Length: 156
Image (tube, rainbow, N blue to C red; front, side, top):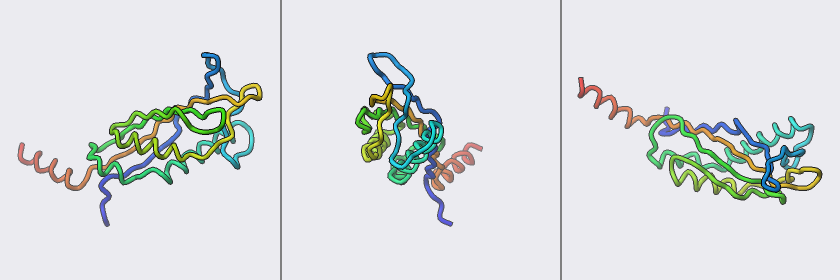
């Protein structure tokens, strides 16, 4: 069986902040942004949003990129902060990642995000800010494992 150098598993949307900024104060919005085809009450719409966000991200994220970046093995967190504007498009994308190329990849994926039905407050479309952590698990490569074992043996 071929050993994958880096295994990337992405878990999304552990926390979303569903607050809109209006007149420099935060208010809870009445209707969250919605993907085309999502229906139901507020909890069903949130679940649908989460699923479609995950599907879009998993489909478009280049999972081979971390293997080219020589990152240390273990759990890495990418923090994504973006706004869904009053027209339903993503903007103000900010990413904090362990490598600049990962930041660029996340921005590339989010720029291809489809237009959404915007969030609403008192019936008026408003921008909604989201913060999403994404977890990447990087597996130790066979080569690095051998080197680590050799160093350990040489110390003994």
